[in-house]
Length: 377
Image (tube, rainbow, N blue to C red; front, side, top):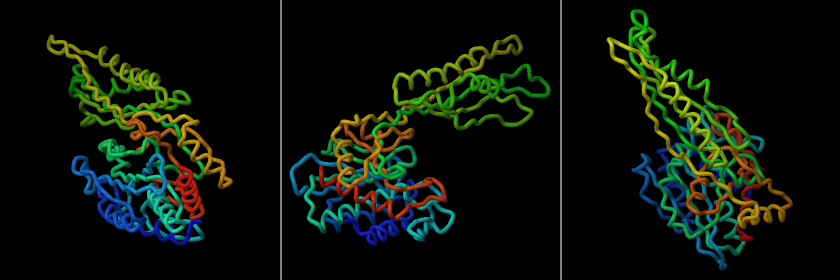
């Protein structure tokens, strides 16, 4: 069913188009031509300038050849770096990059699978429901394109994002995440002459970190402080330090609890930190910036979209593993907007590294599963 040479050529062409986050215009131009060749109606929104990209989110519509609820397919056109002058190499059935760059299989493997599926639907006259395809920008920079997208433009109420490693895996659950920026303000003083007149923001941070629940909290919940910045010189009591971190959980109550514990650990340290300088009591303080990075996604295993992919896999003799993931993706955003979306594995491997690779057999399997899924929708 799948034309192996054609899908390899398609992926190679895409991989050779540099499309790092914020610089997706060349990829958008290429995809516009490809989707229009296949009979799609292409349109763009106008959010690119708002989030700093030279492109916009792409929405492609294919009229159905049979009645039925529309199906939404989601991918993203940006890649992580290093992503300049990517040269895809195919050897012994494995795509890699030729140099010190990523390959771009995340998420061009998904895009190539969609295009090959459309080729097969067309050449074999396979009946299908109306299809909507969204190709977002700046996914790798915090799902920025999806967050800015007006989801009321979609008629589909369920769909598939092609954007995870492995094969024959369907992600139906992913955690929500909170992003934290905590600034701690102490009091500057000369560390050698009068350290007792200072309040060390770094010391407050260190004590707070020791009290925070970090790492794997339970099977549903994690927390991390990823960066710490502060201080000016070794002979100055540091008057400011900034902590950046996150908390994730599949359970909204647990997410709230672990976030509160992180914040309260800093608050307690700040409240206890004070000095008297020239008869005046000086106290530490803090500032908190707490944002919801993305909402949780939880599509029940008996949901129609899950059952659809499961049945397609069974028809191909490839049982699908339905499982949860620990990361966030555009699918979280679409689920948060009322679209029941799961994530289909695309075969990409070692993503976000210069050792990234993609096996042709896995790319073919992904496209084949997608065709069968669309045929049954």
